[in-house]
Length: 248
Ligand SMILES: [Zn+2]
Image (cartoon, rainbow, N blue to C red; front, side):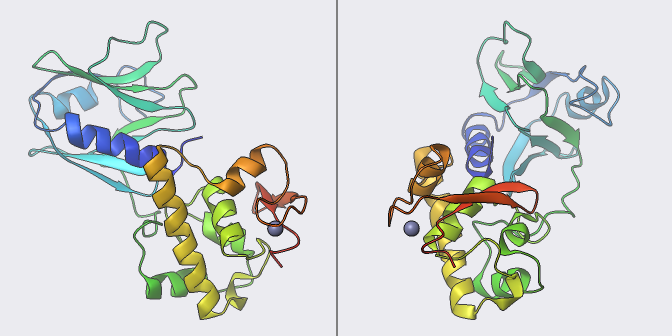
């Protein structure tokens, strides 16, 4: 499932290879992926323009254009951005841009849960999990009786910390996912923020969400630090794993 590192990789690919190329046409016929737009609407808005900047907040990323509206893209569960590749033979390119130079940028998405839309609304997203400052993190995360895991997953609080990133970070910071968020000390909040940033940094370096705890979690195995069998439960609507010996 794409988390912030996958979105960042897609954004970086477009920043490297998709900017400054004049758009010849847009295939926006998939009205589900391109909702709420009618077919031809995105094409009409972007044709003849070029992307000038690729930006991201959390798992959402968007492309600024020279004089037109920004184009928002979302990878959904299975989507990826492919640039200058032949069209998907299986019809998985749900949205595609053809450049005047003959190249092509597509949202390839087997499950069709990705999204392309003009003027994306980012009001529901908090600050990016990889960028948020210490004071803002303390204020946004460290309040209320809600379970810490649920607080961190709330994209309005913090954008881009997905299920795996949060489990890995809570384990690194030795914090129980059910701790009421408002009970954390400032030291614990600072430790947690550093852990989240470190997990995201590691994942960006490896090109996908990764970490020793995520690997153990996938095997339903033992804590990579102390060997205790991991426990799991649904918290905040998501399957959550933790080390019962160290995360109290
Ligand atoms: Zn442990």
